Length: 402
Image (cartoon, rainbow, N blue to C red):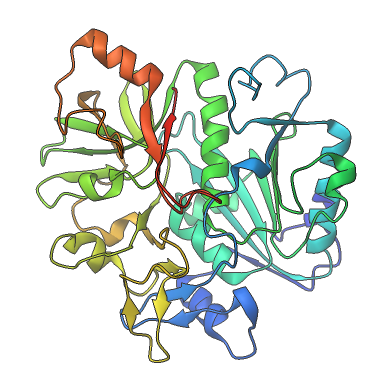
């Protein structure tokens, strides 16, 4: 394997670069003596390591920015007074400043670099390089993205680079016109993401989903926030649309069907394909009898986030004192019944919309006409659930438009 040189990214003085560490090494790094704060992992009774992410226990959409330039100005659905969303504009000058903050944080450190793929379709997948200084963050992306073979790793050239500088802060954020000391920013032209001052693992996962949402539709491919499964013959694909926390993982992880993926998929001329190599399940009130497959996936190599453990590692899945958005990431092969060897299946024959209707507007179950299907897909009535985004503590009605 060729030696990595990070100086082309502006990162200099690395004391060591650990590339694509094994699960065994990650376990040792996460649990070794001397770790403090949010770097420290605790081994649970089920064998999975648990980590805490501080005040950021969900995504921070108010701190999400995309650089406005010639490529993005007319191709991104920007937030506006008429239609508010999470795509806040950032100038190229501000991007340079926040990227410099992230790069400076990563200089002169022992770093982990994880090279992985997003997208099971070889023709349209994105090769991503994650540069982090925290072992469990390397573990998270190892779980959640598609792991390259030794041959693919030898010739790996990234299409996109992510700099996770969770220990840094944007101290001059007011001067820059930003929302806070936290910043999750994307540059579509240079194909880079910076993460500053948030430890929430989901920012890396959802960041790449945002980019697939941008790049794939330009190629005529649907990018979907949905889970997917199929029958045991791989011929009866079902997709489940829904916001975070609405039941996508639970419903698609069905012992009578084969899982394609639990959250992010594309749909092209060949059918439905997973973006990811793992699952990111909510575990609040998880019960091993009602959700045995997810419970059994929580073992060595899985990574728990913000779950309450006692000093002996005993888990209290009912405890929501830290957050209702307690999570576990695990490689997809922790689920026995999955589509192999590639997480893909033919065109969907069943489309299900999971509406977190916290206010009783809709019937519990409805069969939609084609016209109704178009309407609900375009309007996307649902609710944001507690904990999935920073500041959401009660169900909040929203229209998650396509």
